Image 1 (cartoon, one colour):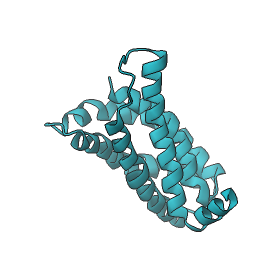
Image 2 (tube, rainbow, N blue to C red):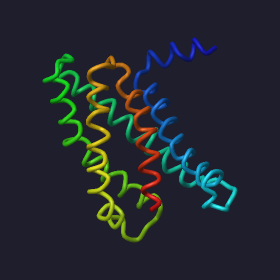
Image 3 (cartoon, rainbow, N blue to C red):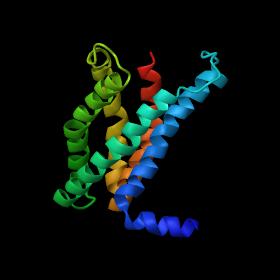
Image 4 (cartoon, rainbow, N blue to C red):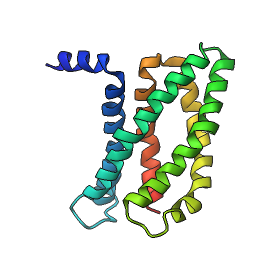
Length: 175
């Protein structure tokens, strides 16, 4: 049965990306909630925040992997190869063209989904520090992605990196 699922997902790359990326994205939120409840013990409520899981599911399954799937297909068709020049160009374009609107969409979208009155407040406060931290993390991660990963694995590798990154951003969002 597992091999049948694998074959099916291989024939549906967008669906594969949605499932894999979404699992890792929501997994980061689960890790954060579990860590706060069980290790740091700064959250005394034993129940999980299901609303947060729903919000992270929207971004992790329906938003980011769909955009990234299309984005990397386009980027890979325009800049082919794994030379230092191509990897550098793709990494810089990804970080400075795609990341800014996606980061803003995260903070603003989360504020909308949380029903906040000022949907831009958190973005104004956290956008620049998050983006700068992201440059330190994502430029090397994306260079590895463009250099080592085949096109079919780009979004999944991104999902693995995102699991690490989201643990940071989920923690930072709660500060």
